[in-house]
Amino acid sequence: MSTLVLLPLVVLLLSWHQVDREIWSHLWETQMTQLLLNTVTLLFSVGLGVILLGVSLAWLTSLCEFPGRRWLDWALMLPFAIPAYVLAFVFVGLLDFAGPVQTALRTWIDPGLRFPSVRSTGGVIIVFVLVFYPYVYLLARSAFLAQGKGFMEAARVLGLSPWQAFWRVALPVARPAIGAGVALALMECLADFGAVSVFNFDTFTTAIYKTWYGFFSLSSATQLASLLLLFVALLLFAEHRSRGAIRPSSERQRGKALYHLKGWKAFFATGWCVLVFLCAFVIPIIQLVFWFWQRGRFDLDERYIALISHTIYLGLLAAAFTVIAAMLLVFAKRLTPTHSMKALTGFSTLGYALPGSVLAVAIMLAFSYLDGHAIIPLSKWLGGSGKPILLGSLGALLLAYVIRFMAVAHGPLEGALARIRPSLPEASRSLGVNSFALFRRVYLPLLMPGTLSAALLVFVDVLKEMPATLLMRPFGWDTLAVRIFEMTSEGEWSRAALPALTLVLVGLLPVILLIRRSAKRFGQ
Image (cartoon, rainbow, N blue to C red; front, side, top):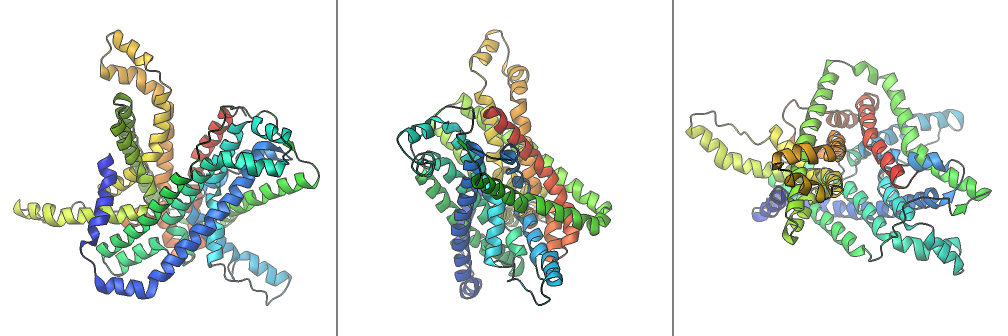
């Protein structure tokens, strides 16, 4: 599996052996400066936004008591279910000049009222912060809960105020978890294609798409992808360096809240959490339902059934292949616990850090080379049609899914296997059970919950994946994500509501799983 992850990296590096000077001269003169500025602005602003939003919400729901805290604790995870490109077109549809908000305000207040353009850098940042803050919220919340009350009570005994205790004790201890959440949010931000397309905001992912389909230069698109990968590598390096050596306590129970907020503090805490929940989940869902009833329901025809079948078929195939590959990885690490095997396993799970657009262009460039230099000549020599087989195939797309979501499946499976004590298979072997029977009768039943969780997570991620699917899908294999892109590209918000609602409803499944796990872990 490490070879599969290494393949796109090698292809990206080798793509620089031949540079189209004309295309790169055009890119450098017209786009490159803006691309770099947009990327740096996006990373800094979104990083700061998810920290402020995620950490503040995590602190309030984990250690404070205020009206509504119990249901807001899990409700604030629900925005995980909304893809960034879905919230983006809802945001634009609501707040654009012809949208319901500005139209209503012009009717009620002033016919000449006009908001600043919603298709702006600020609009992109707001959408990304609302979509990706749950990464920081979930990890920071777990870190604060795992610290227990002991840290904060000791700080109070030493005379620190609640703010000083948070800033000097709780926050430094939770820093590794917060850093990991920020890194995940920023990698998703770099990998996004759909949301930035809705806002007409140029990033490396949109430049890759335009170079591929506009200039018909796969090699130039691959070179742009390697620059995007450089940003991802810098993010991973920064996240690794930011990890601290402090480890939280092993306390796992929530217990009673440490701070009981009253008066205006309780009102502010409830209002802040409810405001975020409304903006990130409730209002978008209400708008999608309204659009669906207004226009989207008329698209419930045979074509939509085909979109559903393609999407589910791809999700099931990718989930099956990814789970099988991840299971081989965790067993290899369990049976051969050497440093080299651990390093190879860790390297094999780095595919999640590769944006879908990067994987797409790298795999397609590699398969284009194989088709041109091996498959087509061999086919002609054997008397065949001499057509490319790998380029634009379903196998290429599935390979991208397996590489991209290996880490998603690896985590639940590794956790499930770690809970199986070595004494159990050893006892089975002492009773004469062979390897196949041991796996079928001992390992598989115990691994089934982790396997199902891994398959579900991969399935939902594949359904929502847009860049790789858009760039690599075989002819006629449109999915729900592709349909959303087509409709939003034409400004058909109402017609995009049906596939968007479908993806959101399916995306709620892993979120519910996360909520149940979190509640079980902390005794809620």
